[in-house]
Each structure stands twice: as C-alpha cells, then as structure tokens.
Image (cartoon, rainbow, N blue to C red; front, side, top):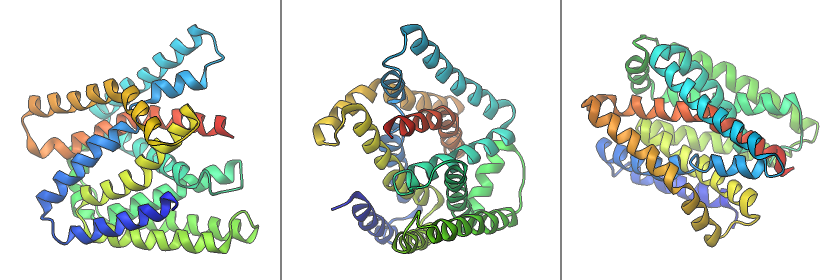
Length: 293
C-alpha cells in the first residue's frame, strides 16, 4: 500500500475525529503533532548537509553549516525587526517547499516550469487554508506584525495562485508530463484539503496537512537519501541522529513561551519559529532532491 493511500485514509480519519474534538482539544492534538513529527522532519538538516558534501573538504562542510545557522539567525532577526517582510518571505519559501515535496517525484518535467509549479501549488494550498480560516489567520498576522489586513487578500491570492497552478497542470498534462489520472487525483486531493481546512480549526487543519502530507513524506525521503532504504530501523537511526537538535528546538520554544508569559502568543511564536527554520531547511531539501536524481 502506497503512503499516499495511507495519508488519504489518515486525513479522512482526522476529519472525522474533528467533529468530536473541541477547539482546545484540536489545538492540543495539533501542537503534539507539530512538536513531534513536524519539528523532527527539519532537525536532521546538518546530517543532510554532511551527506550532500561528503566528498568536499572539511572546511567547506563547516562553512555550509555556519551558513545554514546564519540563515536561521537572520530569519529570526527579520521576524523580530521586520515581521511583515519576514512573513511574506516565509509564505514564499513555504509555498515552494511544500510544492517541491509534493510534486518532485511525480512530475517528469524539469527546469523553471517545474519550480514555478512547486510555488503556485504551495501558494494555492496555503491561501486555501488562510481563506477558509481567515479570522484566525488575521489574528496571527496581527500578533506577528501589528498589521491589520482584510480577508479579501486571501481570496484574491487563492484565485490567482490556483488559476496559475491549474493552467500549468493542464498544460503539463496535455504535453504528457502528467497523466490525466494524476491530474484528477491532485484535484481530488485539493477538494479533500478544502473540506479539512473548512471543518477543522486553523492549527489543526495546518497540522493535518503539515504532518501527514509534508513532514512524514519528507522524513521518508531523508531516510532514503541518508540510509538508502526506508524501514523501521532507519527511522530509529534518523530519530537518534535528529534528537539533540529536536530537543534544543522544543526547549527554545518552551523557554520563550514561559518567558513571555502570554498564552495568546503561542501560535504566532510557533509560526515564527517554523518560519525561521523554513528558509534554511528548504535550501537543504532542494539540494537533497537534486543529488537524488
């Protein structure tokens, strides 16, 4: 049974239990998933860098690691001093990163068209999430940036990004880079995501996609790249390798949360943290995909 089939079943199950979970319960479940698999999937980047530069000189590896950490530091400073710009960049990088994970193995095309498809798909997905949870999204944006937006921004963003993505998909299908069955499956998945995003709270809806359709597939890809197989044994090796960075990341969030002593800042803080590591992580994963070819 392919993982995508399992993910569909798990997504529908998550949708079903949403009807029985209160909003606080959904948030607790979402935070548990994000703090476990979500942060874990980005905690092994240093191993990926070492693997990707195995033939390089030690000094080059050290430089790349310093550069990786510097990106995270700069991103964190952006979120502190220029949050609106940091948020825009986070959405751009996350859109591409989500699309790359979703389409990299499926799409037979290459080049700029493929990379633009990654971006439009991810942006359509995020704008769909924002549009269907506009009130909660606007609250987080206000907490992060002190900027008040209107929800019509989300609807226009959804219209433009989804139209661009659909036109690309139709073109690629007509050129036989994709099959019509694959196109229909992607449209079906977007419909499923729309139902989930509409039914669940913002954080629970985000967690369902982020964990089952991004983080876990990414962990499997990383296992394949690092250990040349995806098994329970390699998963435990992966967890062991990632544990220290994962623990430091969780500890940092907890310390900052209790230092601020403001429960309302938890979700904005979480998105800011994810945003800070997304920039460096997306570069690392893109490099991994290129080397896997």
